[in-house]
Length: 235
Image (cartoon, rainbow, N blue to C red; front, side, top):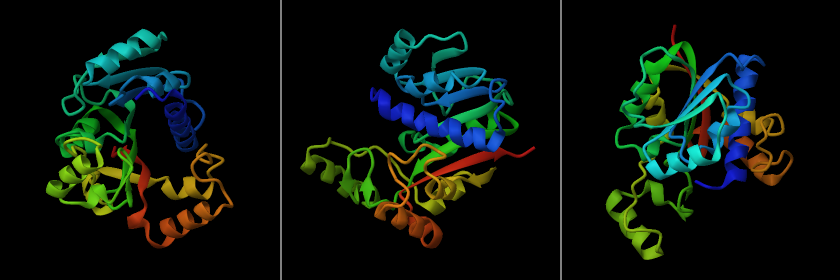
């Protein structure tokens, strides 16, 4: 939550992807960062977009964001992403970055995002895959693929916590989740050109890791550990 360097790197990728798709005129666009946490990414986005609103259900995170980030075009509000307190068709862009697995009802989350987006609006959707070898929140192998009963006990045995709350979906589950949107896949583009999208700190082009990632996205996409998709609300 407080890792500013890492979260700003992720925000830099968001700007690069959205700029690549939408063009350079971002200053006229409104953004909702759903699940903005401590506001680090929303603060970065506010340098490029016209208006940015960050919402989160975590009161301490919102308080931190308000105390540390102040811009005229940046607002932080307490809010539940499953019940957005905004009228329909109001935002050009909604950021949903690794949020779906944390909410009780991911379908409700995506319904709300669809509702508040303008026709033709874009949701920047980054999502982990349940079939990833290592669970990203706790760095435990195979945690996300286990039945809940065993996952809870795995957490206790390893000293990571008492319960495993996250609910990751497989590639096919994610496709069902986003069924009401038009999907534009940027995962492959990012792996093919990490320098353009500022992800070479994770996958540097020309390395063994990069070659393996390219093989996976081209021949076994369903086991890719994470995805970055743009979801467009149909006109």
